[in-house]
Image 1: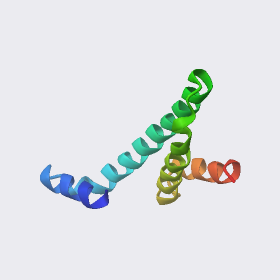
Image 2: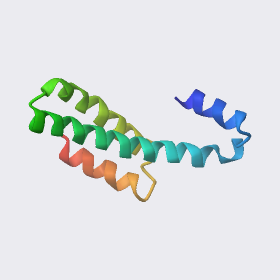
Image 3: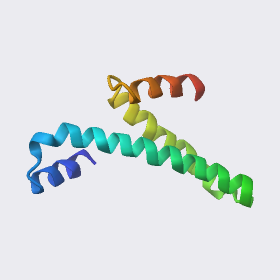
Length: 88
């Protein structure tokens, strides 16, 4: 992912903005993957289809990885700490 992001930044001539772009990708990852995890539970509870439950853990692992990378971020850092407490 990081290599592809670097290629994109180079192609768009935004190499100087790479760190900001990477932060936005991590924020987007957290938002989308938390939404996915919630949707998987909704599908199971409302439709009785538990086939998506196996994707919750990988989704939450992506969220946690982004939060670890951004431990110093004012939003993702505390979120990562909170997730470490509740997702034991």
